Length: 342
Image 1 (cartoon, rainbow, N blue to C red):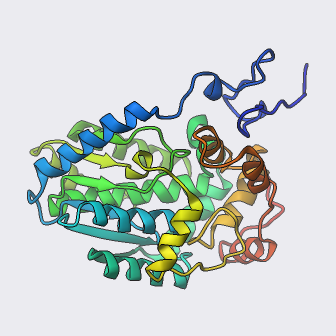
Image 2: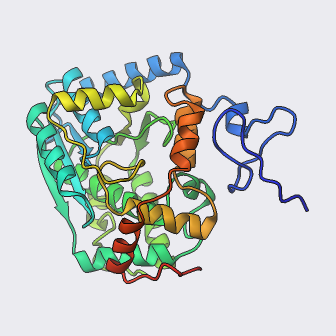
């Protein structure tokens, strides 16, 4: 048995990660061998398709776009820029406050909405239920498929699933034709995703099953897209999930410069992988403890492949470690032992 861990010579992925294989001859992972990043001509075509969608559906609902705003750098920049390019879009920006969003991130979200001219909504859910969900996710093992575990921790997968469910619900209720996320080229490769009524039902059922695997029976649909909303959507046309950051050059230094000019202030979380969420250091610690690799590896590898981050910088981020005080603080709040091993 060969226990040697090989690292891709182009990005940062290694052979110990689930589903990753490094070719012995080329030294490349399958993503680098297959050129998985979006090509320039594909970006141009996707931009034209997004333009057409936004023009065609404008004014069809109470809002044109339901926007996922975390107060972090990517979502804040994405909202500001999309309003610069489409000033007439009626956008409702929803910040899902999971109980661990820094106060500065919330202030940043409000600032960007004021500057951009977007409607702001802070969505909160019952704190004890959220903590139970995050605790269950931390203690779970293999609830999410390998592809999901490559891109995020179990806690983050749970949190973003709740966000998606509730934003789809908000879009249906307000008859908004689009949902927008500020996912980077390292997080997804699909600029436009069609959300048919059947897809919405499938998505709800999938997450319900994942919650049940964690021991959570969401009978009151606190986390899930409500069945009543799915039924309403079945009488309407498809919606679309849009990822505009995939269509723009992703330059972290430029993003931070633009945000600084409009009043966005870094929360200084002592975390190289988050500019909004206090949970992040603990989720990294928990993921490495359970699966043996960093949950941001795939995202960072994607940024390296598309040339927006150097391989050296990516490796530096992965080796930066986590904030031990934050890890201990979150573990205490979630009533979890740091010695826990599934």
